Amino acid sequence: MPKQNEPELYAAFIELNDLMINEFYQNSECRLWNNFRLIAIDGSRLQLPISKEIIEIFGCSKNNHKTKLPASPSIS
Image (cartoon, rainbow, N blue to C red; front, side):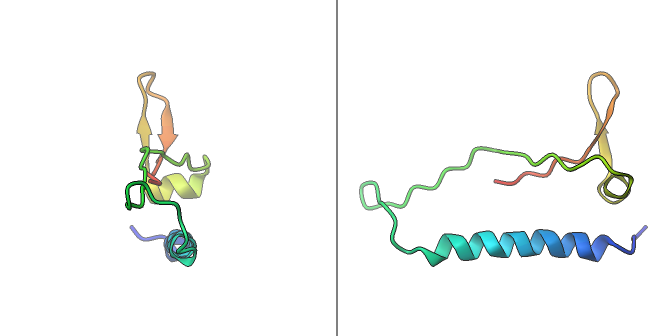
């Protein structure tokens, strides 16, 4: 069941991804460890704001207390 604002939300995530990629590759001078570029991934998750629109588009999950929480996408 598509919503009118879905393309705008998807476009926002695509734009943020493009900004991060450009920033990462823009600075080619970086410190190396044993001639390797170290990149870490920590499993961070983004907590989306609680709003009717976000819950309608991305859904929600329940915790141990059956409280509904909005989606929390991985950002790493």
